[in-house]
Length: 267
Image (cartoon, rainbow, N blue to C red):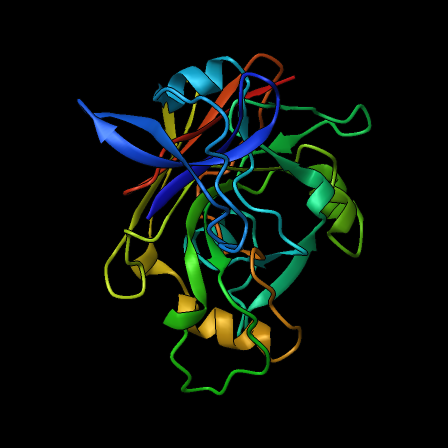
């Protein structure tokens, strides 16, 4: 299963299956909301296959899920903790980003006037598929995973450092680009997955899921023991070393093995 969410030509939102054609990803046919399959597919609307690249250029891509919450994990790579002068946490360091911070692929990250440094943080995001609450330490988490997508945990670094809580520095509108597609055809529970973040085409971050301090199963179980995870909720699993500031006019890309590249311009 690979899909995206887009605006049809008449500005109606819809879901579409994603397939590869000649090494390019295309939205090929309309489908029901994969998280709510009881909803009927929009077969009444004419639809011709269109590339994700064209949808991005036309600003017709939407964030592919609607989470009740975005749970993030701080300092989950040793090298990232070290580059900011922090100790490696002994248990997952959790914080939340508001759903109002979501931004689709092709959208523009708005740097707030009150911040002098806004950083990228490329991450693999888990999408929850069914309610998870108080999972046991040995619970199989696979049935609770709907799929995966790319996420950029944009951060006003100076505000993050000045505030005792990270909500403000992490929670500005447009500070959570996510997408452009969802896939359950990658398998980070059992296979190593690579992540690369580029700024204006230059590689800034390289990470591997095998280097995570806390594994994906551990994170899902740990989070479920303090809050109920609902279908569509996002878990941002952590960013590798290499975070850096973004300036007006920059283009930031997050690329993860098996997923479409998340690309956003900065203003």
